[in-house]
Length: 169
Image (cartoon, rainbow, N blue to C red; front, top):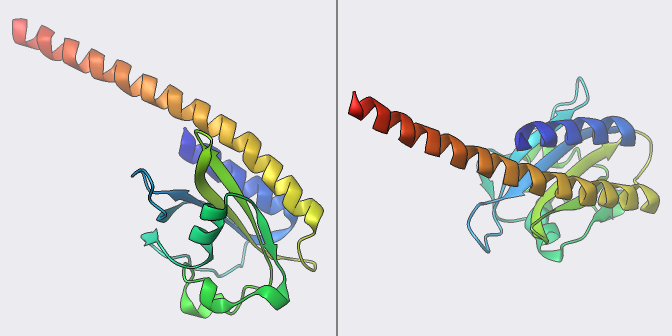
């Protein structure tokens, strides 16, 4: 399912890029909304980082979503006030960040946030790789969504038929 794919994506990105945390934020279901909710995460063992619960409407995440493309932030570009989606004490711990955008039906539908590279800052090549992974994952997400919708419709039909059968007895 979609949540499983997002969890695997977060874990693999964290391991491959050598980071402390990966957070996957997805857009609210309503058309045109810029609100994001955390759908998957991965943390290096021992990493303390508390993401916001609920919807995120301000800060860097909606900006990345609206821009529709990846980005990296080095230590000099980090402004803790832009990380409103993190616990107040954790905002100061962010030393480097990289972002990729997940597309849903060819529109920005989510943001992959990779925080605190273990060794140095993210390179342009790593951000390009992250964007490519997000592009490929977006295609898989769209396919999974169609399959889940089809499955739901079929189960709904089976439920209605079962109810009709039960009524006829």
